[in-house]
Image (cartoon, rainbow over all chains, first blue to last red; front, side, top):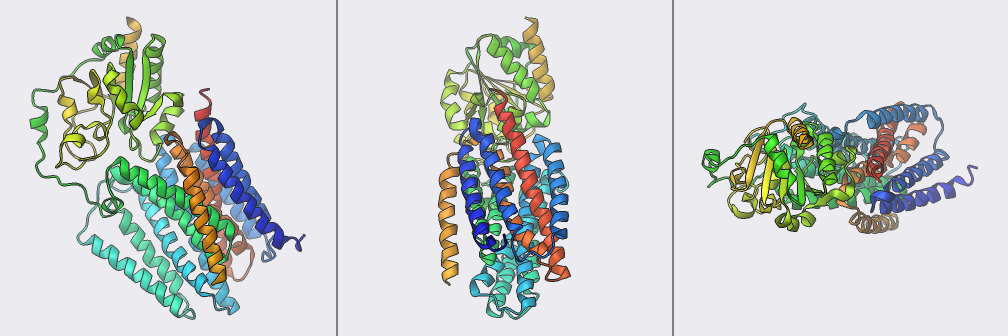
Length: 465
Length: 93
């Protein structure tokens, strides 16, 4: 068997890569997506099983111990995590991926030194890349996890000169990297690169505010792939290179989508810059005497008439756990012949696609979930737009106010519906920190209160009639 | 250098394949796409397995063990949670 291993192992990596690609192709539709994930799992199983035949492996105790411990922890995490906490889970997994890649590259560095080899230039450069990217990913992801889990303040944390610090840390890490390539004989440079990059990872993510978390998670997702690919260059292993490259590409695409959804450049997210805040209207000016509050009973009557209702959920809906109540409301309206659809803003949740998962968990059919570009032209023909726990993503200032932090950001045009009903705890601003003229619009009615409670009351009122 | 160019070729071509395939994934599945990507970036496991099994020194074995644990959490946790989510999108049919 061991004679076949040098052929079998690379073939298994080819098989795995093909299965990953086929699996992701199946993600093009919810119907085939489960099969796609199974193909990916099979690919990974083939690659790992074949690797166990590698002749460099002398003992299996450590491998078995690690596989068992990791499997138990991973399975527990996957089965118990709540869907609202999915961003934290992905942040944590990004970190573990980056961390594992660093450790593998570090081991390769130590092994080469023990054996007295001089690594090639490629291996040296790749080691630096793996140590740098992987360590930034690991520590940055831990901070992102802490922020999403509420262990660290979600606000933008600024400290004086943090951009100078970041530039200095990056320069030191890359300088150490260049030194280690020029003088391969010097030991301990790799751990030094990892340490400096780790501090950089913390400093990079710490200042970033909660609203920008979808961008950060997508970016760290990409880094975890690139770290794996860099480790692939170190080990001259195509399996790692291809899989890492695929993940890197996925993260880059999602990062771009998230940036576009917030009309922000990656640089402005990374450096914590928000748009100009001058010339803003005070909340009192916007709302004074114009906000009309209403009751669940009145909303129920409003919902009797129209042919078409669009529900726009924001993260506030998830916080109040209103998904199931919202599903009941949608079903009730549909039974009465009303067309009900959901308008989902790309950053409605805390990560790409998050809101869709939360609604799918409540058994809302995915055909009813419409993307922003698809639903926006339909608001003019919509009787009632029901906004639940959303704020910045429906703020018309994004279209008109040139001097506000969200200027130019694509929004859901709910104000073009005949009537807009907004369920919200209070008039408190969203992440952008600005008032929302929608709440004071002539065609807008506010229902103040907990999202779940309000929707339950509307459902009850509808049933009574 | 030849090795590097060959690896670079594979890397860049895989990037293009990734971009082609992933742009076709609908928005509604972007969260499972990311958790699935987590699982696949756990491919580092194959490097970790060799590092943990090669028994070069106590230090490399220890580092290898931690790497195996991290990567396995990624692989197992990533694929299972992705499955859990994708089932939710399926059961409404």
